[in-house]
Length: 393
Image 1 (cartoon, helix red, strand yellow):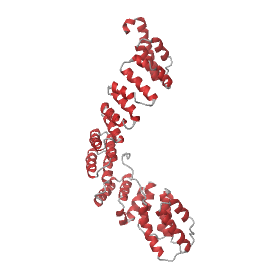
Image 2: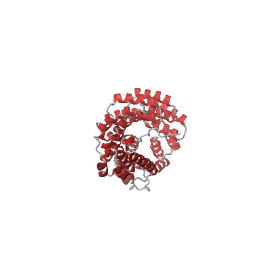
Image 3: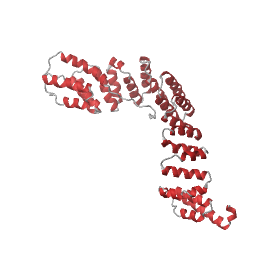
Image 4: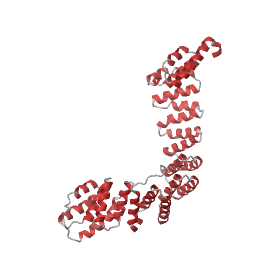
């Protein structure tokens, strides 16, 4: 089963969230009289973590004497695991959290931290187990429902994933991330009609942003559900008429439907704020047969190689062979005559205006098998025209 469509879960290790678990331990410890070294270092490491200085916190923790009798090892390994998790040292973080549990850490949030480490390491079965062991504390963090669902999904347990999302949606009706993920799960399962229906519901209920319209529309496009994609993308464009990403996806959807003119128009609009789209818009106008519009946009392209190569193809389509032949100096200047396709095009333009000598000169440089066959045919045509000029007027 393809899982490319499902959007990734963004794991955000919020310092404020982490601090909830740490603060209770700190408060409890302050009422005791621990070893002076621990008093100095563990609270300092906790404060550094709170302020976002994870590397400094880890450096501080590495100075702790692990042989000290009064050391709360459960607390020490919890702090160390948090620092490592923030530093994206997931393997080490997992080991630290497991050590914390082994040394009596009883705060259920430790399982939440452990779940994050497991998930990043793609240990999905362990992720589910850790989230379940966290108990009711998970109810405070909706993101972990999504993590649990995605873990089930990646384990191939689609029913469990779906049930997890449904339960999360009931528990957090104002949080629409679960509905969104269900849309992508339906797309993964190739249930396109259901995905489109749920997608429309999500877009209405969630006050969706442009990225949602773009992502869902593009997923439907990639799934070849072009009409459903158009419905969603066009609605998005009404709300966000100047968004380049959405315009490009919509343009490619029209292109998939073999409607190059509509695609060209959209890209031309987007090119007003991003000139790099001019070449693609001009090419689509050329494919749509709107050659003069294509030529007009081509004149605005800054990249000389792209501009001249495209201009040559447009002039040939317009049968402006003399102008095409006259581009030789420009093509040579930007190094395009090393392209045998360009050589053949110039040779053909020279043939069309009756300059057989120039055509021959370019054909001599062609070695590519397919183009060489065309060159032979073009030489044969030139020989016939030389023999009977009236036939080639």
